[in-house]
Figure 1 (cartoon, helix red, strand yellow):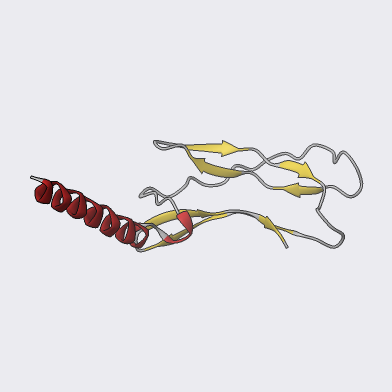
Figure 2: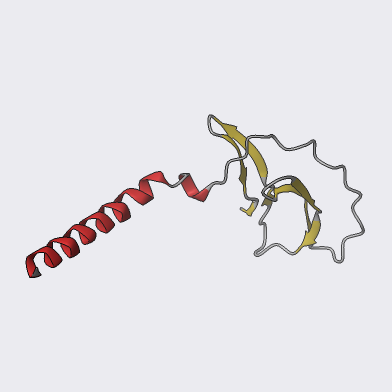
Length: 106
């Protein structure tokens, strides 16, 4: 009776350990979410006047909401440091589908 219990606990521990080792191998690169449908054409936005001389325009982009794309409007933002420029986010495609590459400061 005690032997069966030890065997069950050992087997369960082995199965859980195996699942924990295999799970990261199934994850998509960089936590990407793939979408089968490509994004619509970008919206042409009218920029409002910048709130100050150092502000940089961050263009809008389409965000995937799980069922449809939603437009996220552009905005003015201060750079994090002098001479920084913004690389806009964009949708890219590979064999798995479409995925979003986040915009970032460079």
